[in-house]
Length: 434
Image 1 (tube, helix red, strand yellow):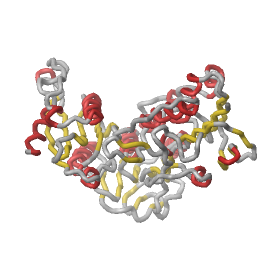
Image 2: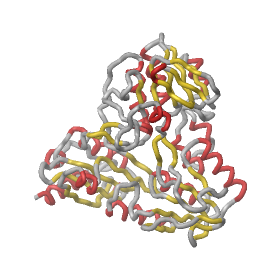
Image 3: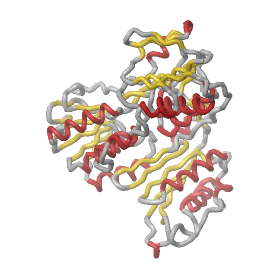
Image 4: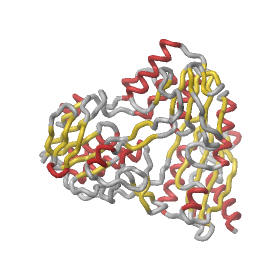
């Protein structure tokens, strides 16, 4: 049996490694179009910002490790031209053909190309891959720009704004929306706007960029431009092969991560997954999701029958010194899904005040009809990561607000408050539900 995996980053290497652990008899080949595999793409902004000193530290294992330690053949700089399911063949751009018995597609996603005049100028950079980061770093070292523009206020845009600030550049952030992270939540957007402005980022929100030219974005000075308007799943190969796409435009899969063609699986940023609250397919391109999906796809490609239960979209990022985290549904998303959302927002402390507790802001969202928790967001300098995980666990369990308000959370003055901020927010939310 020959398992071929297309894509060698998060989902692809997770799939190959899990398949090998479950079967020593499989022949496994990973095809990766770039020069590196198994690297932490989420760490690239922190290399640009100087927190990570050596980009090679972001590489978990080189290709030879997988060949030597796991008997997985890894072929870098190898691009696939076509998938031929009827013949169980993968055709490479070099003209070579590879036969497969099982196939895992983990082609990921690419940076979207904004339709902005001047976006192809030499001082404009996308920021998605290992190669993208190295091109930008070389430009920064060689040209020593003083002013930067970031186009896009999603995860990458916000992280790159902070990274360029850390390099000493004046930073302007552009987005045609007034909101951040695609959450369309005014409360959360206000917290992020405040954090960015206090750090010195100039915000240009609510209208599209009209033109990029040498030295400026519209009328704003910019010697370097990072284009981060969003990403798109890499599905051209699969669509041409007759592999079905979902409504989101990513590859449609079932609970076993199998496509509409038997023996072909898809995982990671190129594929849809199941949204636990919507009970429907959704495209949620996150590193955590990719690794989990890869693990399940690899197991099933090796002969198992494991289900991937789905996700909530739980995520966290640092915005100029503050942690910002979300999980579940925003109010607009909940309303569009047919819920009757109601929310409450509070500000509290992470620890007892006499132990130097930091401020933390919490917003919880629930369905008015059922009282079921639907989502939430947190912003603060500490304790955000643990609390968003608690909330994600509550959402996964389907808890109602009245159940969640008495969750048995820990307390000691150096670590927590008597009433955790999550529980205070839940109590306030119960008042709003009435």
